[in-house]
Length: 65
Image (cartoon, rainbow, N blue to C red):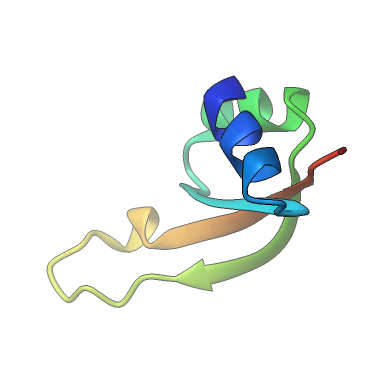
């Protein structure tokens, strides 16, 4: 993740976004510890996907210069 943050700084980006499955509570907790916050949600619409795995969270972290 640190490499991604450094690359974002190099490219003069101010925000890094990611998507995670809302059922992946351990992953969401890990990203929160890194400074990410949930900014939106979405539902995947793949017809063969189980309903309980369709939920996603979109998270963002502001990159400090």
